[in-house]
Length: 382
Image (cartoon, rainbow, N blue to C red):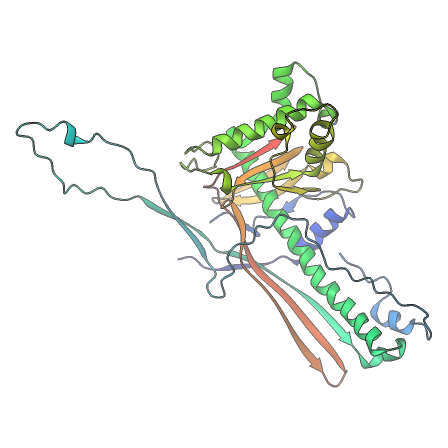
């Protein structure tokens, strides 16, 4: 009997927000209770001090209010209102047998009533994550700080936008945690699920490139694009080489997704596709998809080694896996390999007549899943 497990993820969200913002170094994320495989914003002045310090007269007022623009790939799936546990049913490809109609034998009986049972298996995802942002909005107490109703409402609107932006930012980070978990899973599986582009290229070219200088080398970039394209072609076959459980699955090209680190995508554009006297540029294009500036964070210096690093704990099939994966350039995966389901965003409020303020409770809820049965390959430089 599957039961729903809901995890509070505020601590993880605050930590990942600081990592992506470059406030802290890239540290290990514990995703074991966040990503289901089937089984800090500081107030510099203080609320009271801010309003006490508002000047009596202002000439020009501008409010820094920009809607959050997501940098994470969109992996949202169905958003059911009811239910919580997601299930995937699958069956196997069947073996061929000889057709007896073209080799009938005298006196031989051909039984049409033999039972050939279907093989069906299912995988359940029952973990969900939830967090809440609280905010207090006052109105009457701060009216004297503004010159019109328009300015007052613009100020309140800025505060409310900050709240919704905060949740949007956190969900970006949760989506990136899916890719962190996926990368650790593929790295642990090894085999065809992890392609070390740098080792391969140095082997076939006789070069001695390192991760620090490979992206400045036209030959390496060409080889990387070639290998990613080849793997994508192979994913179109029915094979068990590209998933952790070795299920015989197929990922047609229109079902494949690609996410790349921006360094790789930009290097391909600068050194190859837009290079002078370059011909046949269509064959040199990066393989489409989404571009991200970092997998887990910028570190404190924005160095390539930090932005291409993933450090995470996951729980897969009852086994705890700790993974550190360096120099990840790209991930190719089936669209059913990961996603966010049952996503809900709800805002409620409560007015306090005695204190003359309104408290807002901004809640999000959703399930983050990774399927080990579907295709995924990571491409690294080490």
